[in-house]
Image (cartoon, rainbow, N blue to C red; front, side, top):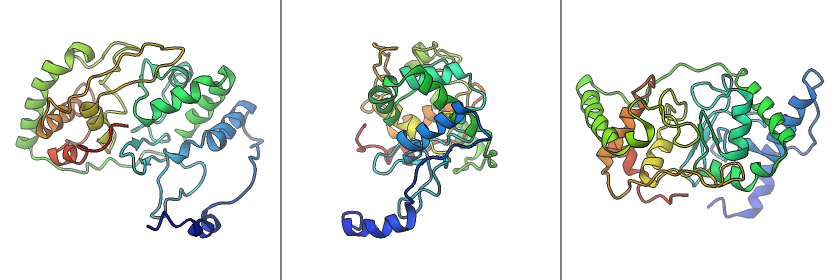
Length: 272
């Protein structure tokens, strides 16, 4: 309640839904407009990548400011902020490759996005994916980055303890794939160094991948993806917090530390 009361939907639609059709922006290219039509309409990307209000509505169709996906406990990062998943400095070919295959030199699609690639995006034409990439890349220039505010403060001693423990866990469990320098292996093991996904304000995705494993989609362009094993049974909340903090603070990454209470909230949540 109240979301199981279907008659309330009429009132919700009155407040937040306006029927209509896409109207091209004459100031933009045909490719940009095609991308906008696909992203804002058929792709409904802001169903995940937008901030929702208390009634579950997004402010506008071109809101890609990021948000926690309802009921799934995954964070869909902002597509407009370079601190998160903004594509302003991405090569177009890398954006298209990620949408089509689920992998790219910059990272891999995991969690709910892996399903989007596997069951939808990989079936699209190269022309449509190029149009989507053009539109999404343009969004990163619209909204300037907000000042970084760490959600959790840590004393120098606390942070030092976390980093020391995290470095040892990383060397024992992670470096064989992601390398000592965090650079990984392109299109096989995603880089952690200077990785936007690692530096997200909300660390929930990194925590969940360490706990439950990370698995890119199986696609025609990447039929046998390399996955990451889960450490749910092997690492305690304190150990997961330590290694995620280490990753978020190493190789050019600058992000807030993670605490065991953050990890504990993710235990018991379904993996997908």
